[in-house]
Length: 474
Image: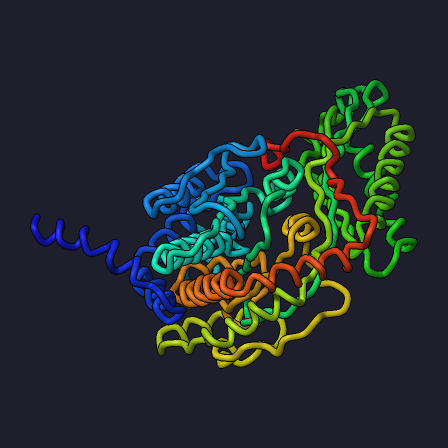
């Protein structure tokens, strides 16, 4: 008991002695067991968008125990939260995600192996994302105390990034209005802090309603909702020839009927539309809705649709990104242990294309201001148009791994994922400390944002005024 009490009394002294950046790095390393345990639990929870009850609660508990004040259920989302420490300016935000993806259940092994009773998986590594961001926020809090610095560190617990647009509701609700800069990161297959964009995206479900009938005895009395959905899909597929090359359109039929001998009375198709420019996304979405209306007219069915998400393209900020890049290089990469190397080599044998060297985990990619955009979408995009925002990616997956794959889930549940996570935590913490120490960086970042966004920019979300689509994964 005396030993336990003594250890407890030593915690503040250890935490509050973190006066230098080297001290901060050491403190994050000292928390390795704690943070990897948190990440593994969230990996095992594997909760999809707006259903991340246990994942959100665990991160809230982690931050609350470190002295953060927690505001739960923000912006109309039960699993969203904001954790705050400190007061006054500058206010620096850190984003933390924690939702999993459906349909990618996988154990932490080098061959395909689903986990019984777990239909989803962290194929985008958000269990590492939220945990590393928490570690960075706690380390910065301790640094503020040790150095008697004024300022506010704010962690945003952001649910449903995968198609649910959680951050959009936070932006729309004004939760970033007093924030000076924002940092984030994302799991990946390399270490990189280059500044680039992403694809704007709009998503929704089209629901067709017909009339059920016996498909053999009285088909003339039925009207097939599935015909309506398929007719829409046919028209959209023809539309692909007449959209710009950068466009992306994907869909899945989520409901197509119950039995072949029953004319389907209900069918649903779930669409994503993407483009580097949100104006193009809006135009394509309008064409989608007209195709749906035409399909319903032609099949004598009825259609309605629900917008489930919509995100801006990412607005890069070179000023902040260079701060992140410098600290990523200071932190450095990592090398595999013999056991990790065996695991990684087996994973790479499952790829359908040539894989890069495993040694790339120990290198930092050259910093670039990337022209154009990547091929993914993120609700960080909306944040970046209202607050200067920068991020990074670290090698939490085996080099060559595709996001949203079983290989990503597998590596994310091992020490490989943990090593990349700790790199990200250190890099974000050091970058935030640099901004606290050099307030002129904030002024320069805002000047750049206003120039890139344009003088007349006014934020309007792509989801309109609809409330969060809390059931979009149902």
